[in-house]
Length: 337
Image (cartoon, rainbow, N blue to C red):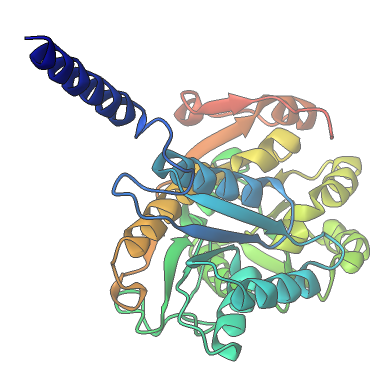
């Protein structure tokens, strides 16, 4: 009888220990493992620090955090973004990352080139690349073929031009600043020309080679136009305050390409949700980590936009918001950081 009690006690002890380990297995799961126990490590390469790209990266982090996937983030500096991205991309390609997520077109070209130069098969899943076919990141949006896919931010240029006409019905000349070496800016510029032509607006474009030329380019452009609109040009967006200050002195409204620019002093925008764009990119990356092929994964183009209007700016410029826009989202100007 005593032997039976000892055996029973021993078995009970074993069962309790097993239950204790089973109960903590999920809670103590190493960071970086998904729900199936697979461990992944991702590199995020952001072209430069500005609000639109920051929001993209935050969305990517949201998706990866939710899946329990570890990641490293590198961001190019405003003054040497391309050089930094080339260097970071080469380091990422030489490392043991399972996947690279570059944010913005220049970062995507750096990452994709680095992977090819290293003869690696690491997938590249880009975020916020307006025209991935132009720089040959993919062969087509439907069938990338290359080991590279991601999300395209199709700035609602038609909606933007319509918004400008609603706020300034008498507008004749619209200005735009863009970087001549940014593929996304060049493709958007062509679309903007077509939409302005259809709306009977004369488009005055001013190209720059680098951010240092923006102040003089803005000074040359402003006297020729009734308003300025932005593309998703990284150099222009990163140095938006320079344009806003000069335009404010001339009482010329500047239209942003997303909500963060409107919060900084642009009058309005037909905006994309860049956090949501980043989250979609992260979800695509997770699919590919789990076995989907980047070469067969169609590029996801996000086109939905929403109108946002800065009421501080409309008041300062004496522009009346028409009744048709009365239900749209409004913001006030935030203090410059």
